[in-house]
Image (cartoon, rainbow, N blue to C red; front, top):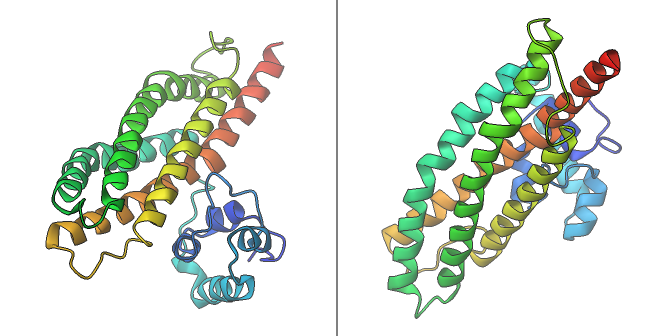
Amino acid sequence: MKDLNTATLKEIVTDDFRVAAILEKYSLDFCCRGGRTIEQACMDKGVDQDSVRSEVQELLQRDESLGESYGAISIADLIRHIVRTHHSFVRKMVPVLLTHTVKVATVHGANHPEVVKIAAAFERVAMDLQNHMMKEEHVLFPYIHTLVNASNGTASVQRPPFGTAKNPIRMMEAEHQAAGDELYEIRRLTSSYSPPADACTTFKVTYQELQEFERDLHQHVHLENNILFPKAIMLEEELLSKSA
């Protein structure tokens, strides 16, 4: 088990993804801002760090064999998992949530003006993420696959038109940050996905769907920012240094 006083959030979650649920409960960002310790993240959010650390420690000690670690997965398998699991989830949920957020805003916007802002924020997230995934699937991921094949001796590696993987990765990380910020704003507007007393069934379901969408995006971004992208950069540097 890592030292919870010095380990970063991304390191803790990479070792055992069950911890993500605890961090999400306290709105602690382990994906885009995962380079902070529990202490630093809690200070930024005004959260009791002892409570967070205690919950994380209890979970990790409960049964370490239950934890899910993605750190040892191969690059190719990790990309396959991201596309099949997380990109597919986004594409499935975007039309559903666009319909539901607009419906809730139309019906309840007069009494709950926050839902109008939520619908607009999710529309921005939906558009940005769909463009984002296309760039990953058609530009960045194929290049990373080329790096993997070159490391296996089944292909040669040459510098891509974008110079180095670091350039599109930097753009992908910025887009992750923008989507994450929008979803944190949605979390704030929904009072952490707590529907009002007069909420209808669609209203309640929409908040549940938004929470599930945020949870999936956190895992999605964590796998890319904290595991896939560093592995790809390291592999590229190794291959290009050999061919120099």
